[in-house]
Structure formats: structure tokens, C-alpha cells
Length: 313
Image (cartoon, rainbow, N blue to C red; front, side, top):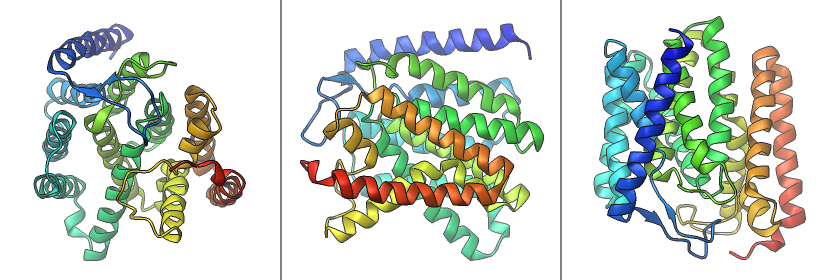
């Protein structure tokens, strides 16, 4: 594939993103800020649907590869988009999510493994998707962080191919298109559940493929920065005797943006760069990667001890 091909894909994704904005505006698919939001103005929701569209474009242009993954992605994107338009019951949402996970695991060939691998994969996958879903309130963070993760996965894929490179290239283009409208001081759109869940499901698919192919679980640290933030935030909320399923603003990046008033884009770049450094460590020396992850955890604790009293909620 040449440069012209990818320029065409980028232009097509850009045009489809603009078309979605017109549809979202007419259907009033918007995100209204509340007391727990990290933004202050009404913004279009669901711009991350472009991640799903990019994957579908790849699917039709490349002989329908990874069909079970694509069906699972379609199910989880559809229910998430419906939830963006009108909140739907968990009685509907959860069965769809678990069906999508089952299809993903089948694509991996995971059902041939011992049962505890399936349980571990389910816990990690659900955790990653939930962590991604929280990110969307900070301008640029979903895009910046996802590009860091995808670049690391692309590098490993070039050295030790586990999926078609073009799949990652097209998703990178989709994220870049999204960033044009989200990575700015006043975002034109948010990813919405459809975007956050779709990109998380996509990255989980890639991580599962490389871990199963190599047997190297340290690749999970390609999501280590979010992992540290999410896990320690959950522990902190348990210590505060809060319901961990309720909305909140206690992630470190939320504290930075909301209480310390650090510009959203600086916070987003910081998280993206931190993850890129950690991913490079994973690729080059897993001992350094583990040490860096421990250092991140200590830094999180010290940061929260110093600034947590600033939290309003």
C-alpha cells in the first residue's frame, strides 16, 4: 500500500467525521456538563464512532479478516452508541458486552486454553474498557494516549507480526482524524461511549493477540499508565468507602485538570508521553519497565497525598 492509499483513507474518514457531526447536531447527540464533568460547555458526543468506521473500512478492503472480532466490535459499538443517544438498562448492555467478549475470545482461540485464562482475560478486558470510558472528559487524552499505545503495538507488530499492519495504520488514521476535533482547547466533540469502548475493545484485541502469540504478559504494560491510575484510584475509593461504580473525579488526571487547573492538552500529552516511555521500556528491558511502573505507583500515591484535599467531589 502506498502513501496515496492512506491519504485517501484519511480524507474519507475526515469526511465521514464531518457527516457524523451534522447527524449528531440534528439528533441532539450532545454531552451536557454536570458537577462531576471536567468540561464546562455543551459538546457533541459520539465523535469516536470514527474508530468503528475505520475498522469497518479495513474489514471490507481486506477480505473480511478477523470476522468474530468485527462482529463483537459491532455489537459493543452499537449498544454503546445507543447509550450515547439515550441511557439504556444494564440488563441489555451487559449481555451484549459479554457476547462481544466471547466473540473476541473465540477470535483469539482462547477457549482452547484453561478456564482460568478466560477468567483472567475477562477481568482485564472489562477493566481496560472501563478505564478508557472514564478518560473522555479530558480534551485530547483518549487520542493522545491511544496513539502512544498503537505506535508501540505497531512497532512490535513490524518485528513480530500478530495482525495485519494495515489494521493498525487505519486505526491510527482514525484517531488522528478524531484528534483534529478533540485535541484542542475547546473540543468540538467527545468520543462518547461508542468511541471509548470501541478503541478499548480494539486495543484489547491487539494486546490479546500479541500476548497469546508470544506468551509474554509484560505487554499488558502498554496500558500501564492507565492501569496504575485506575487500580490505585479504585483502591483509594474503597478506602473512602465509596461506591466504585458511581461517577467521580478522583483520577489523577482529573485532579490535574479540574483542581490544579493544568490545561487539558498538557495533561493529555503528559499521559501519552508517560505511556510511550513505559512502552519503550517494555520493548527494550522488562525489568526497567516493571521498575518504572512501580515508580509510577509511588508517584501517584505521593501526588494524591499532597493534593487530594483539593477535590470537591
